[in-house]
Length: 120
Image (cartoon, rainbow, N blue to C red; front, side, top):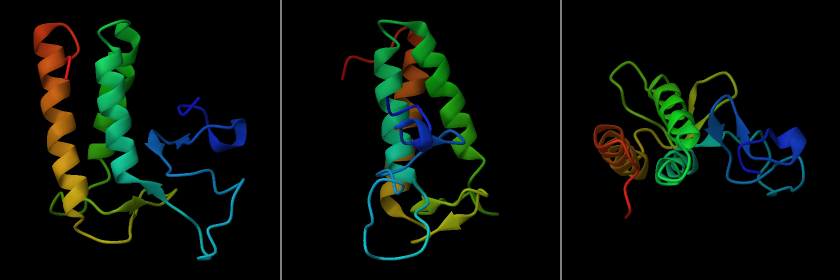
């Protein structure tokens, strides 16, 4: 369900995952919510783990991860959120995004090297 677009009840657009569907709820802050880097990378990790049962999920994880790497700024630092146009929004650099990026990269690499998804 998460991998569907917000218009179809999901949370994903342009290979990036939103924290919530802003079409269905108002956070009261105003302005447009960007896709959340942490949610995107957590999705990569979940898909990597699901790849042990079905390799198509590992392919989706790899594509989502590679797309995410394109959202870094000129020195490859990542922000808290990503706009629909691919620009960084919110806190930049975002430490949590970088820690989760390292974890997602490690687990994805391990899954691809072992030919299976990690168990942890």
